[in-house]
Image 1 (cartoon, rainbow, N blue to C red):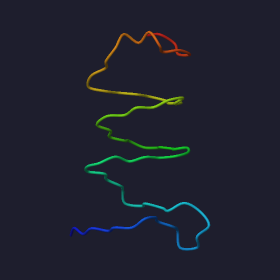
Image 2 (image 1 turned 90 degrees about the horizontal axis):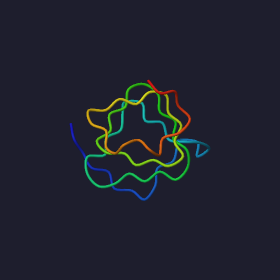
Image 3 (image 1 turned 135 degrees about the vertical axis):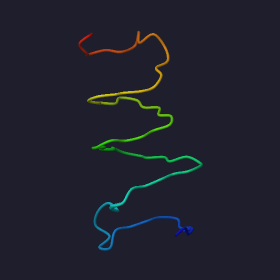
Length: 77
């Protein structure tokens, strides 16, 4: 089943907190802008990601770009 929803904003049922997405969220084209904090748990698949001031646990990738000269606060392997 596929359908389109066009809205200016989403609000939770009681209009007192975040909207819960229980079965996943997919942005197939365009851009997803998030103003504020993001907490991610579990496995996340990202095609391209730009982050500033990020705190992460484990990062795996098929390809890394750059020499890592700007990376700080981690134990080398």
